[in-house]
Image 1: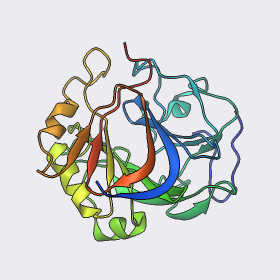
Image 2: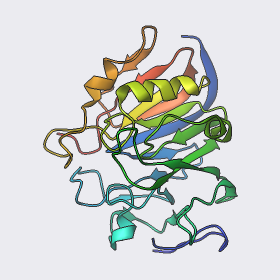
Image 3: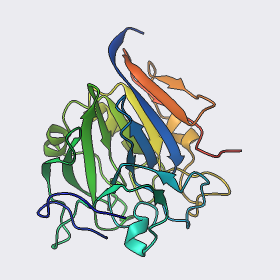
Image 4: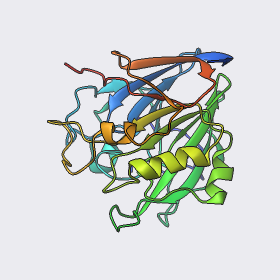
Length: 255
């Protein structure tokens, strides 16, 4: 496994629509997604260790972004280098002081990302430490992944993330924001049109059985939002819906 990036940035381990480019979004379970623009670059976010027994990994990627150093988001942090295949650039956004290296960083000729620090600790004291929120744009679509964010967003975090079109947001509570807080976060980002809930309980797979299931989040969304439940692990975003649409794809390898 090679780690490639500027040395000062990355430490190795550790129904109207807007037409845009077509981007494939694949759900591997928990908080792990890949985003693949038309160029074929595969951007993976938050691969999980085998402790979280979704069947989707190992899988290939070109760039791996990790929001923080817990086993369900950073297998490399625990010596597991076989969860992502190929020869990816592994992006670790924390510096020697365990703080996020905030700012906009060029990762490849095609991909730049904004790193934003946030708390993992919830209002009730769950979670631990800090997380990195990532936002990046490919094929004219701006994505943001909020990792295990524990609080609703500050004004500064909203500004740093930018005009997000597609949002990956935790909804299960306990260690992250819960369903109602996730709705509030989505509303803090008024440009968002596509939402992918994550970090929720799946019976028989998720080790943390006290997480809420995704149905709790779906029951909390406002009137006027749409819900799509494709029987596929991949959603192709080639247009953005006119209203907020929540996508709940199945996970890779689901029975």
